[in-house]
Length: 68
Image (cartoon, rainbow, N blue to C red; front, side, top):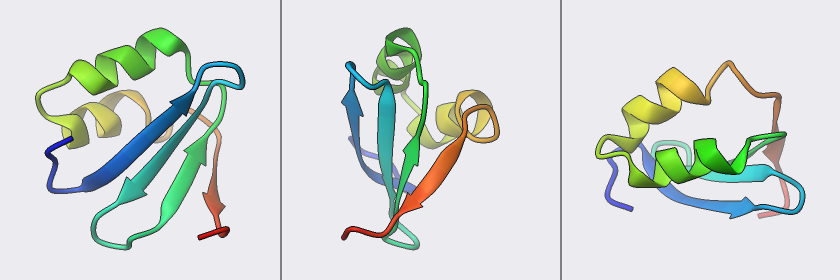
């Protein structure tokens, strides 16, 4: 996933949790109740940071994952 702001993402279709690791902070955030269609569009987006900001950030409940 080439992006200047997002290092990595993973999606669990069973729980609809999208995990996103950010380049600047290195931190992982988990976004709840993200539909599979939104994740598919995110993966297909040319500008993943822009898509994330417009379609995921501030639209889904999230939490900082401290396991790593």
